[in-house]
Image 1 (tube, rainbow over the protein chains, first blue to last red):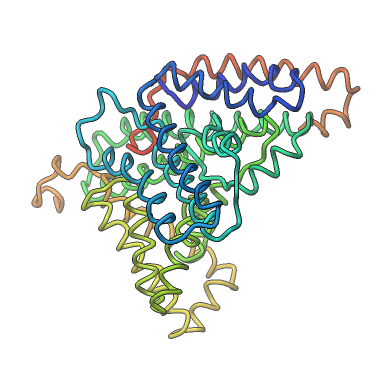
Image 2 (cartoon, one colour):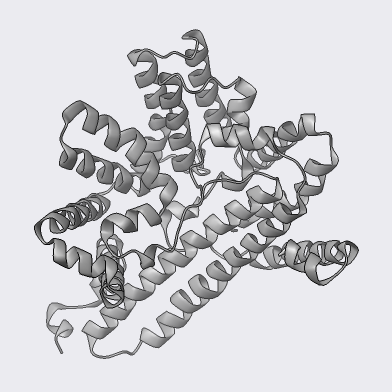
Length: 367
Length: 45
């Protein structure tokens, strides 16, 4: 079963209740709906998630939301433990279901950093409402606490929001079902089955994988953003036409925006401030970004590949300003840049399984 | 979308269309709910 769609269905069904009941208990209705679904699917996992969140909050409360270094480190490590346990593939599947653990843990770390900076002091209820927000539980985006609280405070029934939310859900369904599942997966597999020569087949497989990755991920983000709008909450956009970027630096400002901005705020900037080494900060943030997807050698390679691409982009801008100007300002240059970005990203997908190499032998490749 | 509807019909009809759309979405989601979630591990859960 597709859990994200199940969650969206529950959001749709709970929407009349959220708006029918008094505003004072709107947040509680959202929280109860989320807890109800999660407890039904995986009660033990939810208990673990709640225990971690409550422990974190107690540490913040004990330090009066002005964390010292110990408070920060302990409340960052707490959510990382279950996340890493799951990511390294420890045999927990029979009792621990991840339930969007990657997003959940990164939200918790975000709040820990905000408390450390003295910029957040949520009550336990506010914190749980933020963490257990059904529309974004499984597929993100990693929304931010201050914006969420503001949105919840100002929340009122707006038909325009409601129709926009349904529009986004429809776009999401089309991206996932038509483009992702039908076109780039099922039809592409049929078309490529007997394709020759093998190098062309590999190229097209790589492009289909890239297209599918974008459509699935952007589609699920649309579902989450749309569902949140049904409850009157506007959350951060996750994709901004990434393949219109003309260089890799711009690409990472347009692809999975909530995660890349999280890495910028909580990895890149602290490391840059501590080390004054821009490249080390960049490499480490891309590494965190890659390991967030999966803790494996192939994702480490993928992250380092992207870090070097961003580094090369910055270097090229300084070393050859005329080329950079041509790519960023000239219409033909812009399209060349976009093609270049698309292909670089597609090549990076080769690291993460875009092509099943075991079906090819070396000699067969050049037949 | 809602403002477009309001420009072309009365509020009552606009609300009616939005309600129909809501029911249609529920139906579409019910249809797609058995579709697997894609081939990316981080999208599976």
